[in-house]
Image (spheres, rainbow, N blue to C red):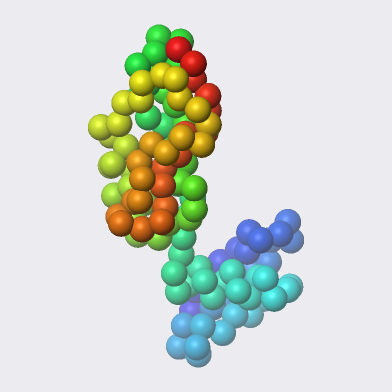
Length: 116
């Protein structure tokens, strides 16, 4: 059995997921909490946020994030991909910094405009 705190709504229900009983979820106050608990136990994902270097005196770093959640087990590999990235202004919010992480649909995108 695994225990989680649901983050879907402000209630913060304390969930228990029974892996041996077809990932049965208890403690949820709604169906969305049940789906969250099951997904968190079977295939946890996260949106990853970080920053990368920029060739700019005014803004030496640019915040970036994945545009969709990636597998929790891939977070460190994704972070290491950012180590060698250096952006050259202009950078626009939404620009793809690294495309198709691990051959999938997720991209790292810029989350700030940097002109110079």
